[in-house]
Image (cartoon, rainbow, N blue to C red; front, side, top):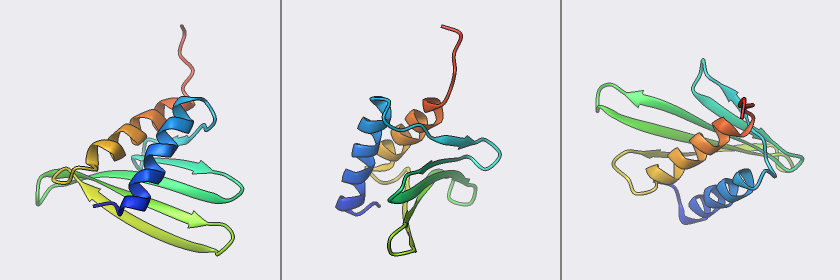
Amino acid sequence: MFPPKIKDFVVELIKRTESGEFSWIYDDDNSNVQLQTDRFIVSLRYSFNGIEEYGEFVLFYFDSQDQKEYRFYTNQTWNDYDVARRLYDVAQSSGLSLPF
């Protein structure tokens, strides 16, 4: 489960991505979306846990100033999974060029 501070950060990332402020890189081979800014790099990776049979997301946050990476985890059994899924979908589509 994401800590409250991280969940709030994810919600803000969704808003800024939907408004067009952020455009993410989508790596379909690794089910990963990544955003690079001057202050931080954030990645969100999806996987399916075949043993426990549920989807899960890991959010990696790299602080450029501190040069530290932080990891936060959620899965389908927790309430914040839908927020992570929303960010993943919004981020994945942010760089997509559609015909109309």
